[in-house]
Amino acid sequence: MIVHLEGTLVEATPLSAVIDVNGVGYGISLPVTTAEKLPQLGQRVRLFTHAVYREDSQTLYGFATQDEREWFRLLSEHVSGIGPKIALSILSKLSIPILRQAIAQEDVNQLSQCPGIGKKTAARLCVELKDKVAGLMPKASTSTSPSGENKTPSESPAQGQFNDAIAALVTLGYKLDAADKAVRQAQQKLGDEATTEALIRASLR
Image 1: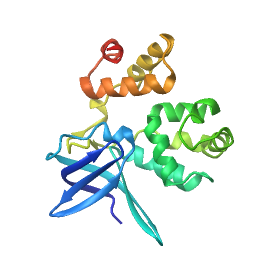
Image 2 (image 1 turned 90 degrees about the horizontal axis):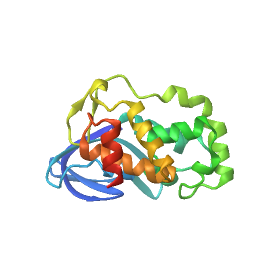
Image 3 (image 1 turned 180 degrees about the vertical axis):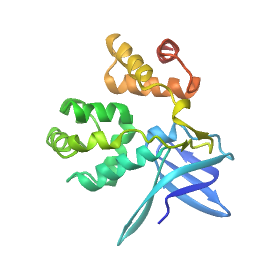
Image 4 (image 1 turned 120 degrees about the vertical axis):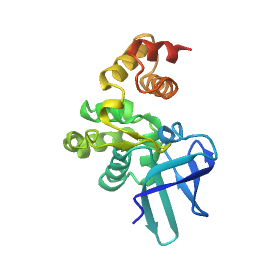
């Protein structure tokens, strides 16, 4: 089983990448939240992977963190009606903190805004995953960013700052998914040490 890949990024789109590993190019499907964190073409990249093998296809999915990969597995393997493609679209629409919150609060309206998810599927997702959400908290072990740089939990932005910035944008009239995306992009631009105020200012630009 391929659990991660590390090599040179040679192609990238919002939903896919090609990584050259010792002369072999691996095509990988990605959620937008991972694609946003990819380095420039020609640079080193490392992704956590999950392979799906079927009679007529072999697909490799890649993620910036182990937590994203675990959520992908949970969505695609434990919720009836949700396969790998829909799981990827959910992770492209919502960051992990917002997805976890939506499931915990049984926010069917928010979840049903994800492509391929109707209200019935969103309700089933909440029922089947609500008890498992607590077991998918961010891992305490050292993680690796797509650029190959090791990061410990102390180097990650405080979850409270991330949530506070999103809440501020929602108060200003942003939809939750739009606020989530804006803050993610601001965090990517400013780095892990960005304050809530800095995230809000960058998100409004």
